[in-house]
Length: 476
Image (cartoon, rainbow, N blue to C red; front, side, top):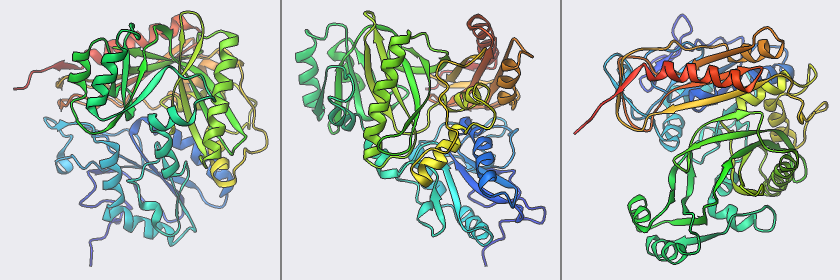
């Protein structure tokens, strides 16, 4: 007989689980969130949606995350990390890093503890929903009878997340930057060399799949291309780099081949040409540019809808120095701004208006939006916000700890109501003392205020706190 996964106090544990504070209650209706801790807050919005559709039992969630922290302030967490060195991975003195989404989803899908927990849950409810930050093929738990994704189809999302697919299938639908597809490294080197004299401001090179600056670079020379992309195989998209100041991003939901909901427009903050570090709202784009951003996003969303995509997605753009809007890419998944826009809509629309997670629920389940769906437009009231993701670029050691703050949603509500002029929270700090590998998120800051200047002040204070918690170290 396999060991029991539920203890007498209801705590769920197993040898494949790095950490758990989840206690199973058979009287509750459950769904799983599977993704990084940064999207934990979205679960409360989804729980409220499911509660309206399953009113007979309290709705609860299990957050299955890869994040290795010294301690966890949120409830209902189970940690699975294929790179963790057992259950002591994030204890004092340990070394932690970021697992790839593919390896994490594979480990989750093969977890004996989760599969036995699913059996127990399905014995008391007809269906178990999986809410993913990103739908990927490595997730296979939905192949279990009674388990389904509450999000986009995995194959459709994978297809549309390819930069090559977007370039080929959106031509004539959105305003694309001059670009070409290169098959293999030799063609990449030859074409970038040939175009270097025409595209004098730089050449952006991206692998078919890239995000947040990974597998892509703005190159100013052939030496940079050769150094950044050494693999002989693979396909690449090369495009003309356009000097610009604004990097707007649009968050949206697609319900079918026609209906696309625009949640809002934020400005991305990019460093080193393509490394994303956060977003701010409201956007600095002008009214005409905002309308063009909405038009192109709806057009792209309808293309997704015709392919069978249902759920949240985002589109990234740039606005050149002449004010022209250029489409850059679709992100066929939830965005880093999804939680902030959930809070913004909650405090800007009439009470009872569907949340973004409710819109996605209806899009996936019914292929349409629910009654009462309303666009925020420009009516965000007094809310301004900005986020900052502190991602380490070198090996570091943490020497201090910022306790997890769990009041982000409350901060938005209090600023919107005029109770606070400004607030900021530091979330998901890994803890101390730890050795942290490059590429790992150390912490995030969310600042919300009644004005841009106060947001900037709150963000700078949060960033300063984070910088005091670690020191960079050299490794042979």
